[in-house]
Image (tube, rainbow, N blue to C red; front, side):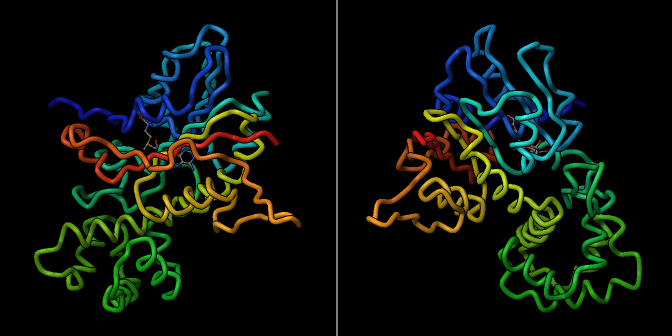
Length: 304
Ligand SMILES: C[S@@+](CC[C@H](N)C(=O)[O-])C[C@H]1O[C@@H](n2cnc3c(N)ncnc32)[C@H](O)[C@@H]1O
């Protein structure tokens, strides 16, 4: 059987064009994955350029080429500033982030991200630390679970789902994806199995990996981590992520509060490069269904 590609890069040229690469500059790809975007960045860098790549999943970093311009960081981009300082690459000329999980996470039968396969209910991108989805279902309060499924999964009526989860806690229903799906079977609306389970799994995955907290931490650090005139190029896949990025670019904070001085002048650390968000073409979506929900925002760091 032919192995599926680790990941097909989304909005490859637009997002890398957005970095406005100077050949001897220093760049960071915060979400290496299968390395598609990094490969394109390396193509545009000269021999004196540098690229630092992050991935919290060690399996992803195994896709890295042997290239002396490259530094590999197995870590969470929420520690952006510390890692860049450690690698003496602070500030950088541009940062690219292609958020969320890779296709590999969904396609790997052992990781628990997909209900298509029976696997331990894990869902951690970083398999070396943190709580699994099983731990979370076993220990979170009903209120915490309600928030996750409503906000991250956008599931409207969660009452039956929560009852089923609490009832299942005395057994071993959370050990595997299949046993979990069985435990919540009666809550799944008829003819909407796929859609409903996709929402449940998405909600768990976002919480297990603290995706929104990591994004918020990272965004705040880009203000100092990107040199004046440098670029930020970010691809998001759902509205919660996109709202944080949009607010941040417009105002310098994820809440979207305008920072005005005594005279009413607004202080914005970034200038939007594309007023209108960039989305994939129909042709790209046809080739790669994962691109369907992608949105690209590009911003330039203003002079301090
Ligand atoms: C959408 S994929 C990136 C795909 C990549 N651009 C490519 O072309 O192959 C996102 C990657 O970022 C990693 N990731 C997600 N959140 C992260 C975080 N907070 N810190 C570090 N890596 C993260 C995931 O493990 C995954 O490999």
